[in-house]
Length: 73
Image (spheres, one colour):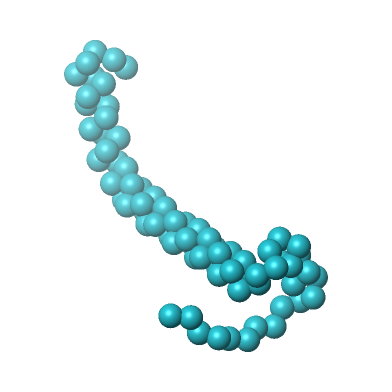
């Protein structure tokens, strides 16, 4: 469902949008979705990094055990 809305943008930004796509709504929708997807990805990556860091000591010990078992440093 589409909802009509009104936003205020700087003139230079609007001119740049118009140069890319005369359909402002389509351009802003696509740009907004791309930006939100990037924010979601950044958030997931930060959560993954926190999880890895929380378990880093155990994971590193396990990796060293495997290397020692294989006769590697």
